[in-house]
Length: 145
Image 1: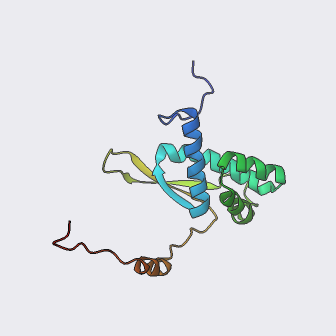
Image 2: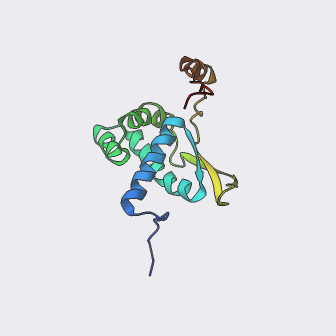
Image 3: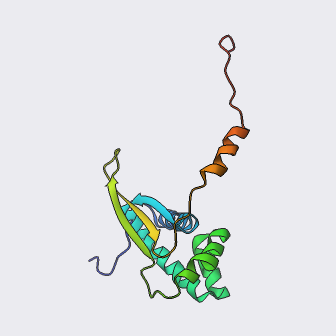
């Protein structure tokens, strides 16, 4: 019987699934919003909400627990310094899942996973433009091999 076995396996081994979810939650913390499939969003939501709960208390022990789960110090710093203070008044439900269209290749349902009260990180196209101009493209000559 499969009673009380809630983990979504997502077609991966346990270590691969944990690493994937940790990377997804780090991307969510860094970018404030990620686009993924509905099944992965539901699995990542529980990990993200547990990390925000750790961040709300802000103790050294909780910071170490979050680092052990996420494996990225910069994401843990953003979590504890920026995201958790905005969620202090909430008792749960820190993230939302917004369903989108189906993916063209395999028709899987896509979704956006984002934090509720945290504004999304604005893309900076003005900063990206000079970086693209800094590296000129090589032009291949017609006679050269």
